[in-house]
Image (cartoon, rainbow over all chains, first blue to last red; front, side, top):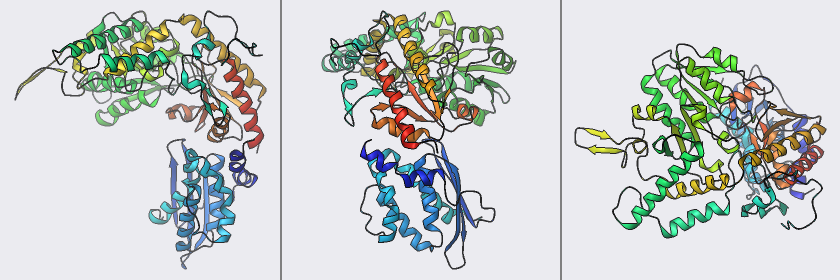
Length: 147
Length: 422
């Protein structure tokens, strides 16, 4: 199989897409937003519970989409939970750089290691939007989605 | 490709049409993608263009080009002659009664919008109804939504059966005394369903209702005779007919065109412009404001000439054979659900794969050199009808062969291997 494909659909990604973490509705979210990719019709809803300390106390997502968008959403929830909002922003910017094949050296070593599996997407420019959908939706929830 | 080489295992059945030879007219099909042979199965989105079309456009631009209907100089006359000859080529292709029933537009979408704005909008009262089917492309939905939003028109949706076929009785029942237009596709861009257009027109006319047919797919695969169909409006687009982008055609009966208000305003569509009054040109010029797609009209005419220089029945038989072969091959995949199995359907195969999203599937196929479309295909009401958000679609054209289908099947098996069954 060609290497780029193997890189894109590696086991970690497939596992996240088949068994997404933090999946489902959150009834008492403090913030939520719906993201939509008009290209493919994929939808994702991101729910947040923001703590008084400015941390993401809880986060969930729900939606349907391709393996890339589901895995990315799942990994995002894993990585954002417990993080404060400013750190989360830094992480998001680093992630966006990574999937576009740009310099992502502003990511911490630990974050870079965990996000490394998403790096293969940069070889598939048509699919970058799949990977970023959940992240943009998170940002939208934070900024405009207070419930 | 060496045509004198050994016959491939999946050789063509004998018909009066040689797809391998036709394939040679399309230079792009011999390029490779990711080092693989290109299997272009996305002609439903846009067809590739044969050398004959590209040459015709280049030759015209290099030797006869000028603006049309304007100057008195030599080239302006030559270009005008060619542009009007292109109109007659389209007339013949659709078997329209008159050449002035052929309006050049920038595409199929504009052709339908023209009917919405110039023909239907002026007569819509709140509560008036427009009948359409759930398998319409957005281009045959959104212009009618405009009339719903702005003028209170009511959209009456006709469902399709589970196999994707149209229930003519359901359509007939949806046509009431309030119906102002039936807007229906001739061939679904997702299901491949070919609608019984002649019967639809007869039923609608029996109730005094005109019919618009979206022929963007239908004209590619069916032999269209607008007089025999008795259809009021028929929209086509150049780029799916092996022609260039930027040009389409609205066929409309002369009686309708004469009464229609202008669409775009500008040069060429007027008779006389004063400070306080204006009179408009007769159709079709009334609807062709501004400099038209001149070079594209030459390309479109060349494309139609290209299509008709083949035995079109034999081409249709070839495409149906590819569809039947592909349909048969995918039966081996019990994880694949074909969406649209209407009897007599055209050469489009849409499907869903269990545990595999259409975009993941299309990405893997792409790496195998197989170009397919994945997504909602600008037909979201239809996706909703079949309880999905996206499908993968392989669409076949005259230049496709069983080798392309074999590449698709191999790619599907590979995708299953990569993405597994969850």
